[in-house]
Each structure stands twice: as C-alpha cells, then as structure tokens.
Length: 198
Image (cartoon, rainbow, N blue to C red; front, top):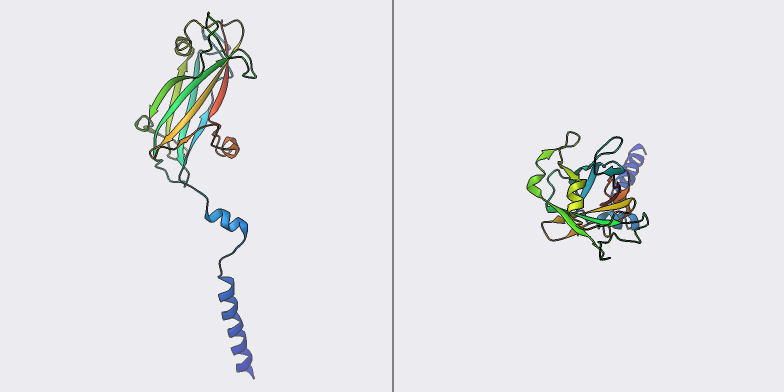
C-alpha cells in the first residue's frame, strides 16, 4: 500500500512539473517578449542653470552646462550610436507661441548648434561606466547663432537633442515617449533655459 501511495505522489509531482513549465499566454508576457530593446537613451546627468545672461555676473552664469551619457536599450555598456545633434529655438514667451525674430521681423526657427560624434564621448561615467559628454554652450555662442535678434525681455532658449543610431534611427523629444523623461531614464531630449539680456 505504501508503494502505491509513493508511486501516486511521484506521478502527481511529475505531472505537475510538466504542466507548470508551459509558456504563459497572458498579454503581459506577450508584451515583454516583443519589446524592442535596440534603441538608446540620452540620459541628462546635469542640467544647466535655469537662468543665464551674457555677463556671467552672480547670481547668473553665462554658460549652459549639460552633462549627459548614452545607454543602449538592452542595458549593454557600449551604445551603438553615430552622433548627438543639439538644436536651439528661441522664443519671446514661456509658452513657445512667439518665436524670436530679427530686426526685420523674420523668425529664426530651429538652429543646429552642435554635432557631437560618438568618438567625442570619450569619458566614462564614474557611476556606471557609460560614455558621457560635457556640453558647454556659452551664451555668446548662442547669440552669435541668432544675428540681429531683438531681445526686449526674457528670452526662452529651448535646447533639443537628437540621438542618431548607426542604423539611421533618430531618437528625440517627439518619438522617445514620456517614460524616458521620468526620474530613471532622465531623458526628456529637450530643456528650456531663460536668457536675460544684461
């Protein structure tokens, strides 16, 4: 009788182990199995001051100072990207309704300020060993890119980043998604700094 019970228990354990090894058909498992992890994230580690001016007199500075790193979507430490492009658009209002204009009333539109190649990310982060870059944008360089601009009051500099992968895909603020702007990824791809002309 003991042998029958032992055989029955062993048979139940074997049957249970086979049925518990089946793949799940739940929607969440399907989602995780089909997530594309081939992109990269441009993580901003340090943002510039909220307000800059031309003189650099305290309490303001005359440099927009960004520190960022690139992380591959699959978590590897060698991201596969070509370059980072830095664009600037200037506005007369904080709602971005009135673009900055020149003395003839012509809008400047978005200006390409910098191209940063993969090779320029030559410093590795102390935190996680990812390639990082320290971008310094002096306000004079920004003003030179907007010749003849009329600065009647505070001007709002919107700096937008594009991360181009080696396969041609581009990640920026309009296609990266809101998840990347959160506290973990810290990758909004766009940031606004106020410029005071004094």
